[in-house]
Length: 394
Image 1 (tube, rainbow, N blue to C red):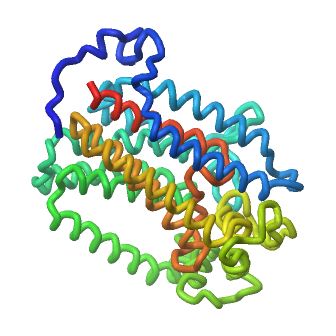
Image 2 (cartoon, rainbow, N blue to C red):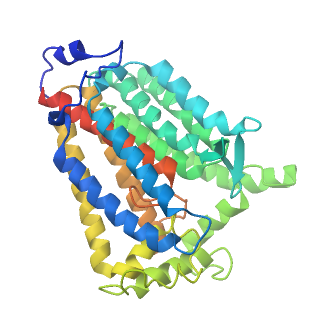
Image 3 (cartoon, one colour):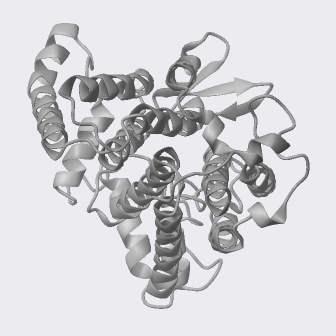
């Protein structure tokens, strides 16, 4: 890491604690990063248009609108001095917890697919748990960066781990397992990059595995005592069964996976052609614009289009890694690596569940899947990466 020298950027700020310059400066825009993202977003809009056409539950103009809003926010955040966000662990933790619990408020929260993870204000719905990804990343990075890359005290490690688990527990009250898993990945990357000792990390992984095994064993007992699903929900158990046996209940709980695999396989090498997908257009593929958007892409653009998407993602992750490596402080490096690790996990999980090699969790595909909250959050995170890059240049 290069040593940070000087604080001239803050002298040009327009307000206390913001670090925003008086005017927009193009030299603070990473054009190669923006170009990669624009290619991904354009590809995503093509596929989303195909997936939502004829479906009144989705609005393609709305998706385009939030892409534009996201781009504006991203460019604004490129001008931000991200270092002003470092060290505010309590504030960021409080915001994260508030966002994860917000759907439980009367008159605001709404339930979708059995989870109370949505909030509606003025007729506009969004997922606070998605927005909390930003504060969870900043909080986790702030928590470990103060140890200067040597988190070797077990008490301090447990303290950081405990703080990081609070937003996870908050989002699991909804319950939203997919978002909760993303939080855990963010925390794991922060601890790894932040210098936690390997034996601490291995002990944590072992403890989590033991807790999951215990949960699976005691769940039937609690269900009998409570007379209902007390811990794991029926659909969560079904997803585990489908993951362990892809041929399980193909007309019931395993239907989504079977249709996803049919869509991916039917695309062949070059695909059926744009707007020629049948699985989504005929209604065989549930949640095609969101959870199973990769299936639409694979069916229409085939193996070639799928590889192109993976190449774009790989280039984005590599670009983020380079920015993290050249960052002028540990906090910036951890923030960027947490974002890159989160994207990598989401890509692997989303595509993996379509192929039957990962459990179905409902995690969307970055910059591709339909969704306003999800799209805005990804552009906010891009803005933070651009801010780290801009400050490193100085």
